Image (tube, rainbow, N blue to C red; front, top):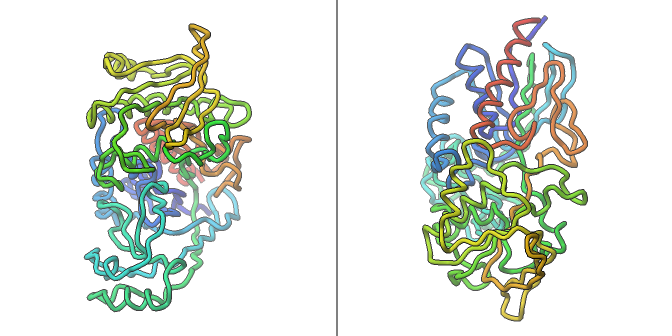
Length: 411
């Protein structure tokens, strides 16, 4: 006997798309998301391709569709603990971490004002901070605060609870186990930036004014830690000279063997962010500038900027001088000349690694790089399957939903 419900593991762009495609033709869908919010990496961007839209542009429409569709059940701060059974009849155990905030929350912010402890923000990749009562971003969905009880004292937690006028803070909230029965599973667990600490020749994440591409994205976002102003992390100064280093961990047998697909486009987008905000001179060090399909036009328009220098060459190392300025060593592949050049700030185009890399896949199996492989009744979508941009991620989500539907219908 087949169960017609569908589980979607991951609530990023691919997962949301897959869930809505199935739900809107009548299937019950469960979205299990590890974060306190839906939207995945797209929610952390300043703008995304192809139209350079702010993330709220595409996501808020999707959130309205979820709100209006009773077939979609959203479980946040949750992970798939186990999957048993077979195609058409899976038993899934989901573990959910406590949020300590219930559905009465209006996101008024009084709990955040009462919180006194400040920690690094995961949403801002460590370049920003948050309180122990927090909302990750202005268009967060579900629009409900989270209490970080692990980093707050008992007295602080009581202050947070007492500050809430709606009795929405529930300090007795506890971990839960949820049992689901589904007929098919879509794995849309997304991607994570490659661990910069492994890139020791490029500073290993220890140089003050060397940031990753996703950290730079947060610096440029109006809801980011600097309200969209590009500042050096060490002193808050506006950089006048910025370098972008391509393939930081990608196309490297010691790190990621594959091309991460989006890094060149992301850096060209970051060049535009920089030039829109300042008069800084920009250098991009690259092996190849890969701009697939219609993105070639974006590249040709961007490289017309007279303040942009494109240098074909592999960066051999980055150190910092006594003032904290990054010094980049690179050999120009065209001239053969090796140089050391000082910058105010360096941005590493770190590769895209599947979230499952180094871990057991939430469902199904993964290849040696951590990308999920389609199986009978279990289908990968988005960057869990391969490196993709947002548009292709959405298409992948639709394709996975169709396969899941065919599976439950055909049993």
